[in-house]
Image 1: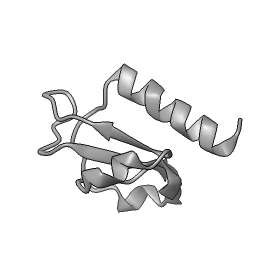
Image 2: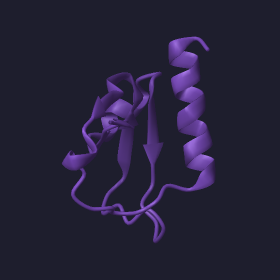
Image 3: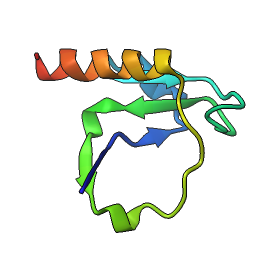
Image 4: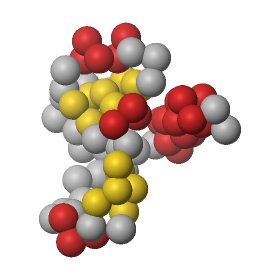
Length: 74
């Protein structure tokens, strides 16, 4: 099992307190501004992951982690 946070290009969701906006760069290879929808955190089978698109920066990772911690009150 792998825990994931889905992304969307619907940037209006970035206004949600449990979401985080990520800008495209050469490291993450995102084609558009995307929003990590932290309130839709879920687990999936590792077999469902087909390919790696890119890697988010350490600063984006830490910011998303803070959103999740705040959301879960931990």
